[in-house]
Amino acid sequence: MTSNLFSLAGKKGLILGIANDSSIAFGCARLARAMGAEVVATCLNDKARKFVEPHTQPLGIDLLHCDVEVEGQLQAAVAHAVEKLGRLDFVIHSIAWAPLQDLHGDVVDSSREGFARAVSVSCHSFAELGKLCAPHMPDGGTMLAMTYLGSGEVVPNYGLMGPVKAALESVVRYMSMELGSKNIRVHAVSPGPILTRASSGIADFDTLMATAQSKAPLQRLVSLEEIAQLSAFLCMNAASGMTGQTIYVDAGVHAMD
Image (tube, rainbow, N blue to C red):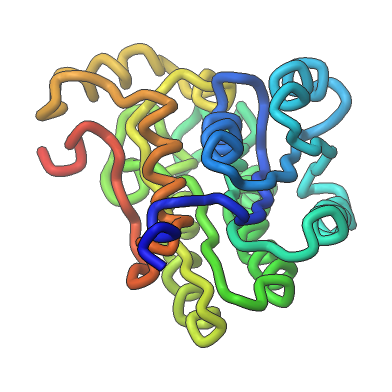
């Protein structure tokens, strides 16, 4: 029994949102495979596939497209994963997006349409995922979403994504209550800033990273591997008593304000 506590061997997971080999979703998928899990992963479209498939194919990761704004694609991704794997033990949602004109402006200047699309893609898709995946997690399991410190405090230039991530963290808490009777645990992982395709859309992101490093008790930024390690632990049997949390992996920056 104890040999399975800190293992992903034999577990089956769906990981959404790989953009390239620097993305958080890829770091999670790579480590999950190294630890013995079977993984189905998604990228956005054909354009993204050429950056993703050279890294996922050697790992034996089944890759498919999923644009959560296209009707039916999220449902199709879950159906494909279930058909391929037979069940789901963990699901990792690493999708965030907002229109650039809204992301780069003040929150008060954001358009109603842009705000709604950002919430739909970055937040509500996780709730949809919960509804779709829960019936295929007969033994329970773990669902993870990715958030950021800007959800709970003002981070310069994070703008519109701050309120969106705040909504996501609230969704995580409600999902943990609603799915708890099925032994499905739900968390938000809050990494420190790392350079990904998604983060490159944030204005002055280099300054944000430098500020985080200067504030961090560990006096550095975290790595993709460290984010994946926390995510992997939360999907293990050893984390069975935890749910509904926002858990930081940010070299301690969250503790400094």
